[in-house]
Image 1 (tube, rainbow, N blue to C red):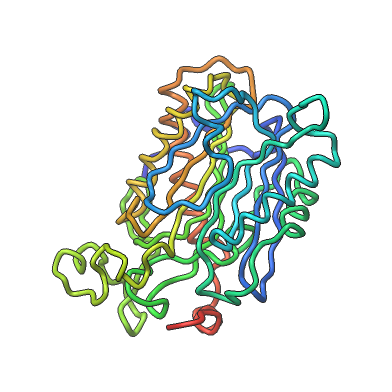
Image 2: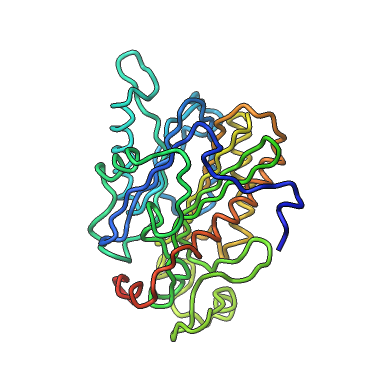
Length: 335
């Protein structure tokens, strides 16, 4: 395990990062929720989408070829494609605050969103809606460092190559690191098909278990040996399209839209180090990257620190406030 202090990196509260508020809303009975990142002022964003089945809203705006320079919010939610309704709730809230792109006739909030599939836990017919998206924005505050089964992480699970009966509860994680004047925050909802590992040590933290749930079962070994029934990578896979890890990097580095797309792609290194397998056709893995500040910083330093910060956020998502095993299995719709 690397000592970040020796690298000159300090962990700080997200409160030190000006220009963003974070809010959560959730339904613990239905096991789904929303996390809102509301930006105040400059918010130049990019995205990296590596999964084969993303559910998203307004992500084409983040292409450097598009005219849009600043966005107003990023929403992470449960509900699969149904959960995209929560983005409309965020837009409603922002419009009421007078926030959005001024067309001369109305201010149109620019809200980007990505969703996880959490319909296999809790209640599949209850998903994030306009009201929940609105509530998450209402709840947005400076310095919200909460992790665990909250917001978009409420229904997050990992290790689902075969059945939910061999999976584990995951959640939402956040971490903020500071290097000199540079601040990088990473937040993530880990809802992966695969197993989860520590960024530095490679130690397994969560994932698919044996049928008796006493020890981890190696997903990769099973895939190669053909020993895990049901996995082929095609549409017949029982977990096809039912997974996704969605995250966001927010930094005070002053970088361009093209730069932020590159930072997002560099952050994917954390997914590669911490999640296996990752970016599959059964996932919708996505990473936003948003610049909210004016600090001069080298893009490669920002991207490298972003990956390290994301690695720690992933760890916290699967280790914070883990649900009791019996309670978790009772929430799973099918085992």
